[in-house]
Length: 279
Image (tube, rainbow, N blue to C red; front, side, top):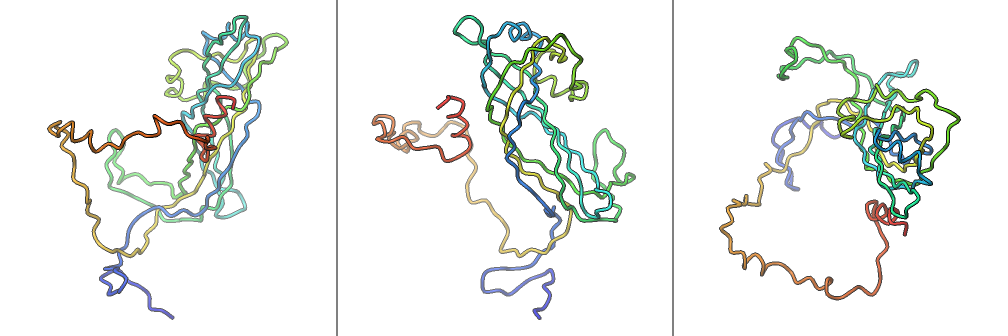
């Protein structure tokens, strides 16, 4: 059985100088998703309600992820597992077509709720910290809940479809916009419709996301050496010879000679661009 490695200097031919104990977050569980969110309610800005009421059709434009609210709760009768409830807030831009061929750009909000169940282990230790937080009580006198930390990574979604639905008279709002954070509302620079309009717009989005549960922990890691930057800082004074800088720039051959073939997109951003162009 190999001897347990302890913090301190190590004689190792591969270049490891010592083993050190660090404090970091360990990922206990994670998942990834590719959600096709169908018929997501679109809440336009008040100034675009009349445009939607007169529109013949709407087509997809673009969507931007503004914020994700994340909440973690333990799963009853299943120790170590937690539910991760997420609410995604999107700023969506659509093209509304009236009688004229030039579309009118309309902006609004979409909200998407998602839940995942992940393993986050257990921790019974009461954690205290001397870290100062301005405007809050002294952290040394406050106990922090020992629950895992949920982290959500997501990219801006792809607008896959959009459509207008006529309603039979005005109905009450089926999404409480009062739950939208104030800083999300401020992103629209105007009041949003309360959702009781004669016509409604539904959007289909494609969302890629990664969810993980992390906990603070101490790990023993190998150290090769101190990390010293090799690149010198640029002074930015503008004293460098501009012609010398220009001489170091490669000649843009591709700008003068068109390619013989068009390369298909290999990543998400290129695919998103092509979908937006309808190609």
